[in-house]
Image 1 (cartoon, rainbow, N blue to C red):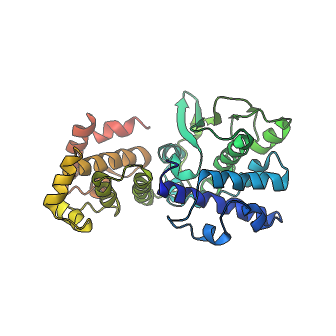
Image 2 (image 1 turned 180 degrees about the vertical axis):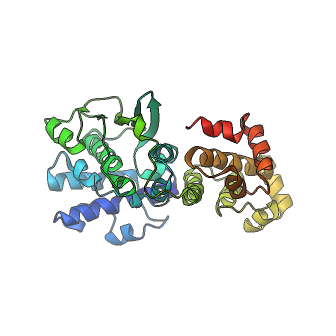
Image 3 (image 1 turned 90 degrees about the vertical axis):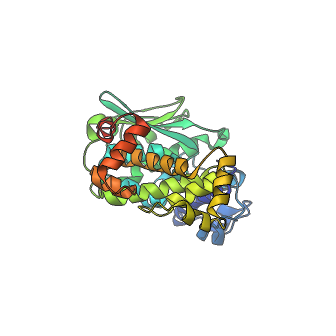
Length: 341
């Protein structure tokens, strides 16, 4: 992902909240950006062609740590990442029907959250965990910062959506914490363990099915489709099949025919079929896969009736959708949904 221009353009959007927080603490923006090759104008409008790399991101955060001399800076800056900072993912989270659904979204669309870790969501009996796995080699001098920032953002960022502080049973951190155990336990409001193989926010599973205060399943479903599009664009694949997939996903509730897609790609439908065949694919295969992936998202993370999901997926009747889903998955939409409740 880090070599994809779209991924990097997305990743640069993680810098402005931290920069604003540093300015509020009295630090100069130019000092924060020194040596990165970036300007405040670059951060205000991070176009896809903006020259940006992980090396620049690392330099930025090293600047912040050097300026403040604060080993727990990640705890402070993590609070700057409100749920709306994450764009479509944030809106999908806020409008999800329950916390369970919202955390499934975070697991499914973790790369849209700016994190350098791989996010998982687990439920084991009475305990649920949002887990951050190491997904790349983060420099040792920045590991504690990224762990602290991302767990703080997850723990505090959803307060707007939840309209309350969320109680945790335990927090696990991937670094040794230095001499700051008391600081961390006061910060998270629960026992904290250090030097784990992963980081995690651990909570009571009984809290997962509480309704989200700002729930709006239709809005959440629409946002999820756009999240699918963003993830597709972050893919390293740039072949014809990927272009077709992006066009199919682009407009929620609208599933174009092959003639429409071919016209958008400035070719005839015959040429499009030939190019897809050369990639061992076809328009109907891509369309079916998009519908299947979206159907699983809607069923797992929304409470929309099957009739409305069928309409969102472009089916004229719920029965047609149910037959298609059983063909894809081997079980009915209702049976699939029951797995998440």
